[in-house]
Image: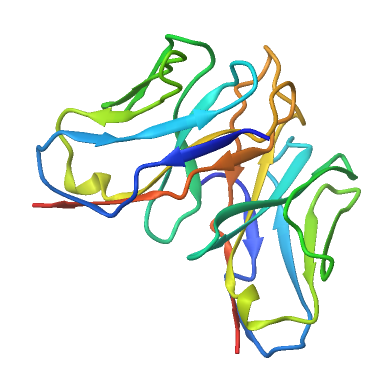
Length: 118
Length: 114
């Protein structure tokens, strides 16, 4: 158990709909990362938050947005869903936002939320 | 940004066989390198890491050596077990410097048969 909790584990919805995925990081971790895993694109970095603020953006579509709340949990909002958005969405957390001598650089991943768009 | 190229899979081996999964990288400077493993139905977890050239990371019988001359970080295990069946990902920071977000290889599915 990594200590990172993601809900829901499975979600089936229709094209054009909007969904929200939730992530609770490990206790004490300030950084949250969202990744999308699909068969054709592999594991893609979407976005990172650190202590409530956006820190880095990756290949995140404009239809997607995220935020991190004062209690450090994070939500990934996916709207105007398309068939191609079907994927496994992972949340990961870490203590800090950057590598330095005081940390291992390790990310702790949740078990993922599997989204199916029909 | 930095990138990683990973050996195509899937790989199927018999128990006690020798395993090598190739990983090469392109990066500015000498970033830390990682191997993550994803067991069926689970999230990724760190398997091992190396933070500088010539470092050898090791864990659970797996090893990988950070080789800057060949920009490689190949994963090896001398004798695989059925329980090693999983997907293995090579990874490094997306940008050199202090950024922590990782970029991952395409993953290699390993199946070990009894």
